[in-house]
Image (tube, rainbow, N blue to C red; front, side, top):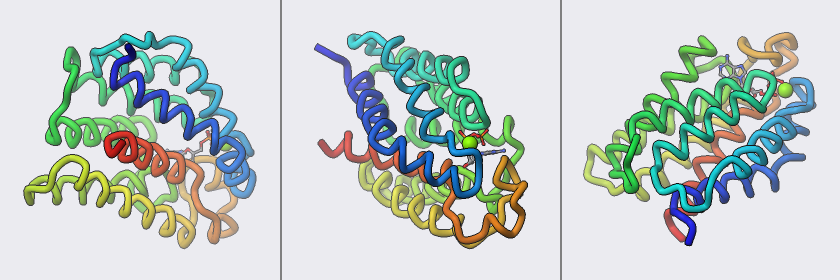
Length: 206
Ligand code: ADP
Ligand code: MG
């Protein structure tokens, strides 16, 4: 039998593969048309590296991050790689997680992305979905909401974050070369980050 964390990462991979062309097309508008290709290559390698019976959530996430780091070129590889590795570190050895754990995983993942990429909110990156998603997640669990309920609210904020990226100019990453011409387009990384959160939500629902 396969482990829950393995099954969840398999679902994330399926989402990435299904949205490979969509993410690449978004990146064609404001980047170099490789975001979907990058993510799809990375997650194919992740699935090859993982064992179906890997039950340690931290271990599986660290393996995921290290594989993304070593197989995905571009900005998103190191950023997502760091995010998964950092999230894995805080649940090392655990086969189940609490809503507080998940909040901490999100927090350190975002912190890792910011340490590496030096971006803040409002620069038209994945952080424009992740930061508001994290904020509402914490607000919800502190108010007594359970993991799934809080994650549902987080996904709604992440979607709003995608919409927000359409209204702003990119000041980090390749899209920043376009200046004002980046306005009007949604950010590919904010889109893949939102799709990832939504896949985890759907996995927990199922
Ligand atoms: P590249 O831009 O090197 O071709 P990808 O196309 O795979 O890499 O990824 C582009 C995405 O990476 C962007 O849409 C953006 O969300 C994200 N990104 C780029 N630079 C940063 C950064 N400094 N911080 C956070 N996210 C970033
Ligand atoms: Mg690109």
